Length: 313
Image 1 (cartoon, rainbow, N blue to C red):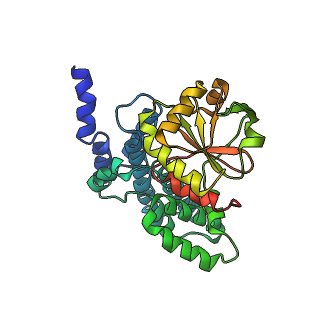
Image 2: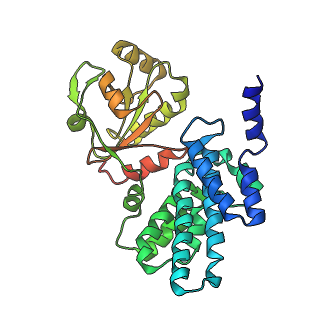
Image 3: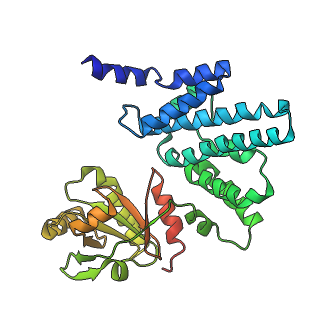
């Protein structure tokens, strides 16, 4: 049992926080680089630590490494050396923001204790935006600012107001959806309605921005999302639907009737489920161009409503 208990104890005691703190205390940039490499390798393989905690540690290490490299600029012997240090510091800093995108949409309680223990921000987009930005990065800066709005609801109103002042001829929701994960083309497939009709997924089902919830009648974890999707379907008819991945159409129909769910529903063939790489509880958003992205995080509904606001109703 010891081999089971030790990883749990390691995580409970802070896990990889210790080498990060040692690097901070000693200013050992080589140790920090080795820790980044070790954590990145660990994230790519089996690990007992929560993934978001590992991502936070890697982002924190990059954030601190950026500051450490930047501190060397004043002593750089030549202008070229200073420029190289600037580029290296910027690379570390930006890596921290990219990592924040990977964990920041989820529940921050998964890593906030690490932020408190390390005396660091809970996300690393704000520090990036606070740093001096060259004019050429104006667009990139706005992309990060909207990402910040997506992960931190307390900043949405201020960021949206600033967008309206600085970019009055552009639409904030359009800019918002442009920050979604890189999408994948929706597969060609024939699906079945609960009435037994065969319809084309790309041509007959997708209507502008379309959100889908993969579902089976026995998915207890889907209960809250099922109700939220049902409400979206009433507010935005034809733009939200249920993707039943249970092949028993009658079972699906009766289960929805018992729950009082009126959401439009299609039954997906097994091949489509494999191509979409979904399981019960998966959420996807399909663009008018028939490209789909996963709906990630605890605030996925904000993304859906922003996208639906762009669709004719």
